[in-house]
Length: 295
Image 1: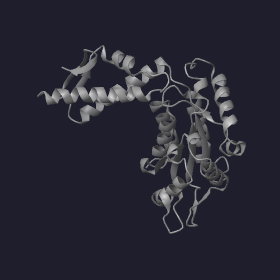
Image 2: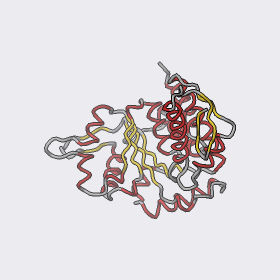
Image 3: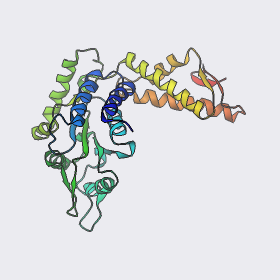
Image 4: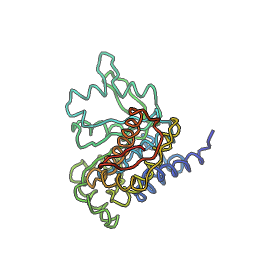
C-alpha cells in the first residue's frame, strides 16, 4: 500500500513518462494536485476543477487518464465526449429523467464516488452544459432529473477544449508564454467568464513538433515490442523501421494520435501476415514496398 507522498511522487513520474513535450502544463498540474492532495490549500466544491486546452493528440486526455489511474484507479475515469450532447434531449442521457432513470452520471457515481470526470471538447456540446459545469464547480453538487443530488467532493472535474489551437499549430518553437497567450485569448472570446473563473487559468498543451513525436514513436514502439514478448512472441525492429514509422505517421495537425495508431496497426499487420503465411510471429521487422514485414 503506497503512502500519499509515494502516490504523488508516482503521479509526477507517470505524467512525464507517458506525456511528452508538455513540461510546462505537467509541472503546473502536478504542483496543484500535490497541494490539493496534501491538504495544504482549502477545498471549495469538487476535489478540483481544471481546464486543459490545446490541439488534439497532444496529451490532454492521457494526462487525465494518468491522474485517475494513479489517484483513484483506472475504473474511476469517466470520459464524456461533449459532441455527443448537442441537443437538450441528449442531456437526459446524462441526467436521467423524473421516472427514476439516474442517467449516465448517476450510474457512474454509484460505482465511483471518487473519480475523474473528463468533459472532452466542451465547445462542441449544447450551451446548457455550461450550466451543469457552473453548478458542479461552484458547490460541488449535481442534481439529477429525478431530484437526487450528487456530492462531488471526491471528484476531479476536467474540461478540455481545442479553442485557439489553429493559431499555434506549427508554432511549437514559440516561447511558451506566447503560445499560452494565443490560446487563452481565444478561449476568453468563446466561453463565459464565470465558467473560466470557476475552473481557473487553463493548462495549455503545446502542439507536438517532429522531434517530440519522434520521441513518442520510439517510446511506443519499444512498449509495443515488449507487449508482444508478454504474448509469447519475439519481435525485433530493423534499423530503418523507426524512421519509416515517423515518416508515415507524423501529423502536424492531429498530434501524436495518428502516429501511435499507425505504429500499432502496422506492427500488428506484419505479425498477423507472418502467422497467416505459416510463421510463428517471431522475427525482425523490416520495410518492404512501403510497408512493414516480419522476416
